[in-house]
Amino acid sequence: MKPIEIKLILDGLDERYIDPKTELIHRNPFELLVATILSAQCTDVRVNKVTPELFNKYRDVTGFANAEQVILEQDIKSTGFFRNKARMIIECSKRIINDFNKTVPNEMDKLVTLPGVGRKTASVILAAGFGIPAIAVDTHVIRLSNRIGLVSQIDPVKIETSLKQLIPQDKWIFFSMSIVLHGRRICKARKPQCSDCVIYKPCQWSFKS
Image (cartoon, rainbow, N blue to C red; front, side):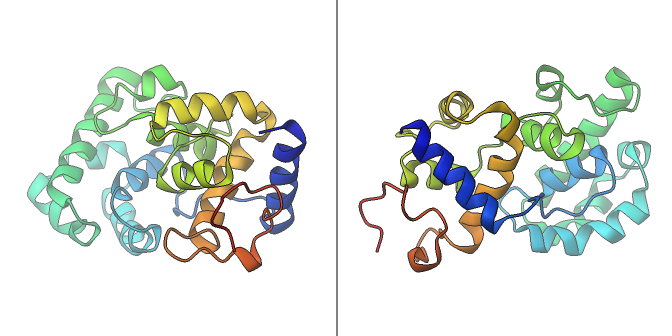
């Protein structure tokens, strides 16, 4: 895709999504980390219904590290895959206490050493938690990046690498956040609303209507 087309995409997204942010409610990087783990195979809306009471109950990283797994499982049951998520949250909390002095690290290489944290989750933490340039590749980013014509592959790591080469670094966070919102609201998997799409012109999808 040509630079002028990428600019049209960024300009179009900028018209629709002013200062886009993650829809996961959080007050600090640790709460964002927990919310992001809970969001796996679950909607942000559902996670946001669970986390206010959850964060009030466990308070901080020490609270989660000392949580009883069977109880935490019940606290987060409605988010799905609750046994695995509870285990990862407890193990992740303990690792943060033992290895990082109770502070969520702000480096990719360190974040991905935490249980349950892959590059996507780490990128969300960097971008939304610390304001550090990163592109989180989730299902929406994979779908839209291919549909629009930015990439032609499905491997998340390769997509992340390609997007970082195409998108100016100072736009990584904006692109990552806005393209997810666009995927949720307009460019949906089954029924994309092409007639209401702000990036219709540069989009190279052969099935756009």
